[in-house]
Amino acid sequence: MMLKKLIAVLVFAITISSLFTPMGDKAEAAYYHKKAISVAKANLGVPYRWGGMSPRGFDCSGLVSYSYHKAGKNLPHSAAQMFYTKGKRVKSSLRVGDLMFFGPNKASRPTHVAIYIGSGKMIQSVTSNGVSITYTTNSYWKPRFIGAKRI
Image: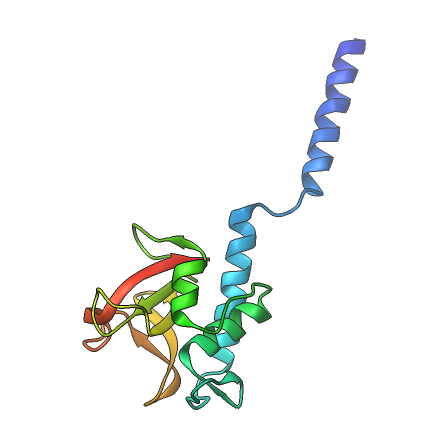
């Protein structure tokens, strides 16, 4: 009888303690990816500004850096630095929040970065439209895709 009570107390203690453990890595990542995308979407229509990192104007890496900073992750203000120094290379399919990198050709250094938002779309800041959403299959961007990183 004493053993049954001891087991019941242990099961109860484990159940209670699991309620107070921190979020797992995947849950935390899902949170900051969604938060960064939400910040970027709140800035739709903001004009492109070379070197811009604020809602007064963004360049591509400025939008990504700003959005992830608001979500609690610090990234450099350079597409190439993000690509070479941050995250893990995506080798299979993209996930929401992955960073997509582009350049003049597939063998070049990245000169542009966007955030994958799901359903084959990405959010970015470009000279022609400012902060905007486009398809990853866009005829301009698709041939310039270099790779993706998971932050």
